[in-house]
Image 1 (cartoon, rainbow, N blue to C red):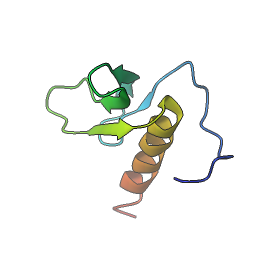
Image 2 (tube, rainbow, N blue to C red):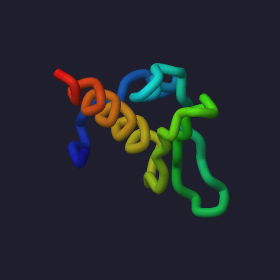
Image 3 (cartoon, helix red, strand yellow):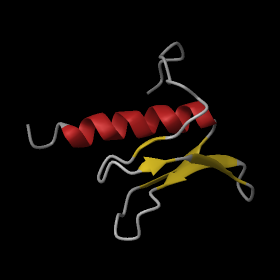
Image 4 (cartoon, rainbow, N blue to C red):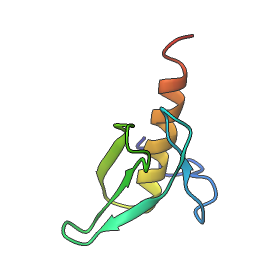
Length: 73
């Protein structure tokens, strides 16, 4: 994830949850001034937090999605 020139996608929209493919948005945590994403589906445990920028959070979400999709291949 440390590649600074990696394309992060369209920054205006969220990404899909790695586990349930629900739209997930990235938000800023005002307490820690970091970025996070949480799947809005109640029974889905997917969460990512502690990112220094919205871009890094989206890249991590995309990488998690790709890795999760490759688990059963």
